Image 1 (cartoon, each protein chain N blue to C red):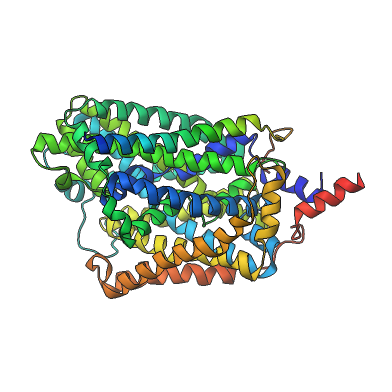
Image 2 (image 1 turned 120 degrees about the horizontal axis):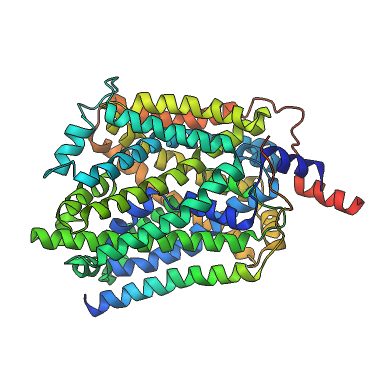
Length: 515
Length: 42
């Protein structure tokens, strides 16, 4: 084995097997969005007919982009910055841009997990009473006016700190003993718990009404551009592609692993889980609509409203309500933690590679500041507004933008997709042809650029949710721009002498020939 | 549920869950090379 790869595997850690890698990648891809975003997006965009644009998006953009990330991380065997640096000297800034985005996401993502953990306990005695919305914003979050305040809410701060402690312990344990072990245990638990939730939801009165609303096809929707945008957006945000996670995880896989076959499993597991979530969520919403004597369109919602307002209302009325609550919020916590771990690992891995730090040292250097910022910004009465703005802008003008730029740069400026295709095909059970390069170089960036342009126009025309301009300019536009600028500034910091900056695969092949 | 809704639900299940089953079957045939030992993070 070459010294570069030997150094990489021994120093950086690695997954013990392909199975562990696949479970960790599924854990990253399956997150809160699968549970609370997909069902409503499908319902709003053609119902049963949505499966067609959704599949087209999965096969022409989602999976090809996932394989690009896999190819990059697996070929160059480094964190996002190191992989981009090894691909081309001028590309490193793209990696740091992705690292910055992951840091920002980790800061607010932890708060939603903390809320879900608290709500799992609230489910037992239905602590939200008859008005879950008033309870969420009044009693629990104690939300005041939009702004940035320092009035801490104990019920939010304490679980938030506990989430960070758990995450820091996992990260300090390392790639296999931390991330790998957590994924091996919690991903099967997540699937079993969610299947149990779906089974219980399907037994509720009115479940079929909800499923009818979700799956009745509106074929006319297929002619609407917005439906295709929604499908590409859902696939893109759901698969955890384009912001360093899959690059990082792929760098921890054995050198001769089948990456294309693994990618298909991860992609279909992610979409399969979304379908399961759609069935469970709409069966429950059908029950809620039937109990209230209204239509499903009156109760259907997504995001925080679905999780923390609609589901508590369902739990209030349903037989076995406490069980539904624990399974639902428990699933959110598990899906959230396995995703959060992958997001923060992108940052830890980047810092470790750049400064040749120990696992524990890098985990603390990244995790402690992230936890502090997270607690100060999100543990307060203004946390919900901060979360909403950052989430909205960093997803669109962070993740989406860096994904488009990375794809175009790798395809046209650095011309690496041919090399990566050969690399993926060398040990891949599924061969990718030149069509893959066309999808990555033209089709997928074009589709995502269209979505991005649409979002840009919408956000410039109408300030998001009517928040104060200064909040949108700092936490929204300002943060998204700052992350990109700081990324390219970070790329100016020199690497340590011990860091190999060539192509580790070429060196490994040379060493094998010499041996 | 309407016949159209049931049909589309079955189509979605067959395509997505069937796709997952096929993908798992595919990699189970293709063992590849696993690392020789669990690597420590230093």
